[in-house]
Image (cartoon, rainbow, N blue to C red; front, side):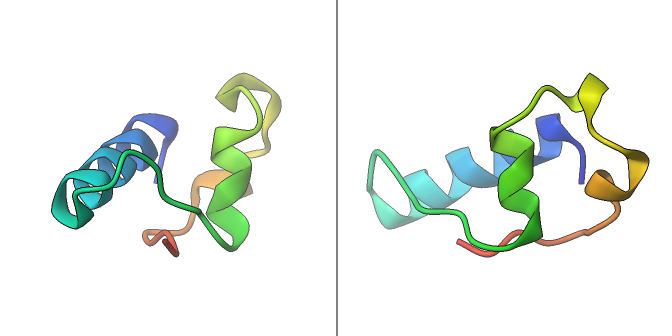
Length: 51
């Protein structure tokens, strides 16, 4: 999952839960912490995000 897909997953989860914020767990949480250009390719290998 790339940063755009990550952002879409977060927006979808917020809309579904009717909450303005969610907490992201696991390895994909790094996508929210760093610019994608500084992350290794392995950071975008996972196809899921734990919310």
